[in-house]
Every structure is written in structure tokens, then in C-alpha cells.
Picture 1 (cartoon, rainbow, N blue to C red):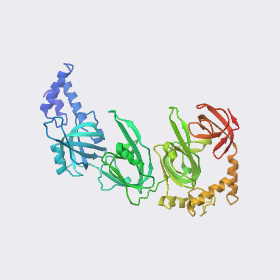
Picture 2 (picture 1 turned 30 degrees about the vertical axis):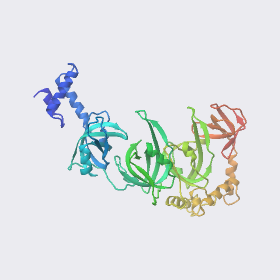
Picture 3 (picture 1 turned 120 degrees about the vertical axis):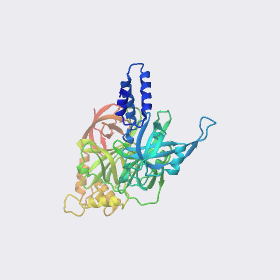
Picture 4 (picture 1 turned 180 degrees about the horizontal axis):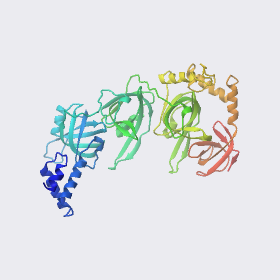
Length: 493
């Protein structure tokens, strides 16, 4: 047995020996004598092994040809097109989505295969596919050269008529899911490799089983501006992808997002504020006890940023939440019940922890009487400084304040604290007000001049009342009493 035969015998491939031998001879000729037949045979074998994809996730655009198994999750309609050759017949193509446990990919079936797909293929069938990978309009796709049903093979992919968030798996496509809009993002643009401009926006949806980020591509990105938090929508023909370890539901040219008249309740699982630790990414919730005005500042790259701080309280403690970018525009008022998801816990002012809500976070103002808000309110109402107490004091401005009189009670409690009410909680409120006028010291960079001055130390921003002449970008230290979130600077140095 010669060297070529030995290499071929060790190779598990559907390529005929004659085709393999011819490829080896071509390789020897291409290399101009730099490789003998055995070396060339090993190079060809290596190329063939690379083309055998163990899973769909192994498929890459640079491969010449791949062979893999996949379960049919969606079958598109046949589309016709004119070929470059005017005398040639009209072309036909049918796109079929297939998936395995590692992911999904679109397979383009041409002409006779397209007709056979429309007549014979069914969702749930397992196919053995051979084709050429390439970057398509909606991502990676495989142009099929050969497709055969494999009745004996099993591919672990769940195909459902209607999905819940907990049902989503990597590779699922043709996904229909109903959820409550938790948050929306603005439309962003980007440049594709071919020079065209792409558009993308995000929604965050939740149901009884969890939440998921929905990514809207190109023309579908406009849908993000049609819905508001709290509305219920249905995503149609979505497909699941992974990003930074999290599953996302994507909506492309075939997908839809429509408002529906259904009841969907999202009940978040939040972390107690008292249990928060620095560098965590968590979900938190509580009643709003402080709100600051939105502030703008200039970034190092010359662009303008914005931030707004609110303070929330649950039955275990309170924390400041910094809302960055578009999140600063959300309408959040005193006594609102809010949930912030995927916030980063950072080191804040005077060694207190601070939560940062960035582009990945969601901001949800809970409806009065919802399961989430009532449950949270009950939990707050049932706890206190005295473990056996069944009622909170009248000046409780956390979620417990909503157990009886709703927003009015919390608003009055906040007003009572600010005014030093002489009720049961008046002494504590007066002490808080007195403490707020103590002198503080803050060092930061001037990101806004005029009235007011805004300083930023990289972790938080502070508003300063001062007549000093300052320059943007100048690092200064201010000292003075702080009232209502503004430092009245006695000293600037």
C-alpha cells in the first residue's frame, strides 16, 4: 500500500479515493516539488478534516465546504430571481433554518432542492447537509450542494409553537414569544464590512419565567420607538443567539413585533440592598425616596453625556442609582416603585455603594397593584427594625410605604423627612436634615461650568454652588455644606 492509500485509509470522509488522489497530485504540482506525495496527502487530509463540522458552532465562513447535521426549525417561502445569463431559466431559492445544541444557521437551497424543500421538508426533520459557508445578509449561511434526510440521527433541539423566556435555547429559530416590555433603547447605526450602514435597537421583554433582550436589526429597529414600558407585545419569527454569555432573541427581516391584548406579568427576583457587594452585577428594586435633576457633561472625545441619580429603598436598606445615557430620560418620580436589572455595584460617595445603570441595564417602573409590586410591598411592610413588628413606621419610604396608601403615603413620608415633621418619625427626619448640612469635601474634574458647576471623579458627579471662575477639565477640590444634593462651596482649591 502506497503513502497516499495509507493516509486515505485513516481519513473518515465521503470523498472517493480517485478524487482524493487527484487532489494530492494537484497539491504536489502547486508546491513545485516542495512536498512529496505523502506530505501532500496529509495536507489534503487536514483540509478535509477541517471541513467536517462537529457542530453548527464549528462552521466558519472561510471553510471551502462543510458537512453537518441539523434539525429543521423553520422553512421559508421560495423566492425567484433572474440569472445573469439572460437565456437561462429563472432561479429559485428557499431558505431553511437548521439548528443543533450549539447554535443555528440558515441553509440556502437552490432550484430543484428549493422545490423539494417546499413539497417534502417538515419542521423537526433532521438533515445531513453538505455546502459552502459564507457571510449572508443576516449573518452566516450555508449554500447547500447536497441535502439528505437522516431518519436515524437525533439532534437535541426543542421546537415549540409558543415559547416562554425559560424555553429559549441557543439555536432556536422561528420563535414566537409574548412578553411585557420592560425597557427600550434608542436606535444605533454601524458600518458593515461591505460599506453599507446597519441599524440596531433593543427591547427588553419579561414574562413569568424571566426576561430576555430582543435585538432588532435594520428596518425592524424602528419598532423600538413604537412601544413603551408596560405594554405587552408578541415577537414572531425570532431566532436565538448568544452574546457575552447571555441568550438574546433577534428579529431580522422576516421577524415581527406586534402589540397584543394579553396579560403578562413579569415578577423580578431582586437582591436585597443590604446584601449588595462591590463589583456585582445584579437586579435591585425599591421605592424612590430621592430624585436628582438630569445633568449633562462633556466626554473626553468631545461628545456630550448625561446622567441622573435617584435613591431607592427596600426593607433592608437604600442605595443611590446612577442612570447613564438614555436611562437618564426615564420618567421616575418620588414614591415610584422601580426595578433596575443588570446594574453594576460600584464604590460610591463616602465609601457607600452605588449602582450604575448603563446600556445593558433595564429600568422598569412597576404598575400599582401588580404582583411584583404588591409582593414587594408586602415584604417591606412585614419587616422593620423590630423583627416582630407587623407594620412599618409612617415615615417608611421604601416599598413598604405602598402597602396601604400607595404613592401618596410615600410622597408624604418623603415630604415629612425633608420638612422635619414632628410625627413619630420627625426626630429622625430632623436629624437627617441636620446631617445633610455638615461640611463635605469632594475632588473631581469640572465637566460643566456656570450655574451650577458639575464635578466628576470618575465614579459619580456632584453639583456645586460656587462663584469661582473655573475651566472645563480642571481638577479641583471643594469643601462646604451639602443641601439637597448640592455642595455650597465655602472653599475651592
